[in-house]
Length: 117
Image (tube, rainbow, N blue to C red; front, side):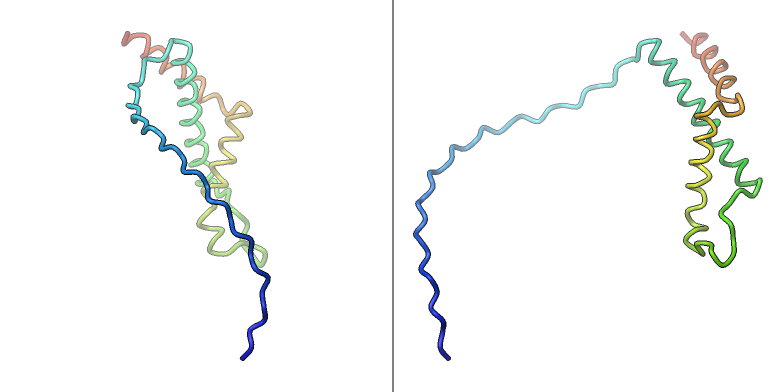
């Protein structure tokens, strides 16, 4: 067996050692601070919208708004992910005004939140 000659490689210049970096101290997690009233109202509204979205998703489920069945359906996998579709549809409904439930929930939450202060 004869080996084919290879071109000799040029020697590489030695690299200078790098200076070690100083270790950094881990930062402690900061404690959550109380949100200003305007941020608190935004959080309450977001929670109210999330609850309306969950309510609408359940209503869509009981109304039978699922993926179509038949020859062109997605089969078993489609059944497993149908809830994600309903959740997205419900969230889109809320983003476009919903049924007014979020506003009523927000008013109630804000009233009770103000009373607890």
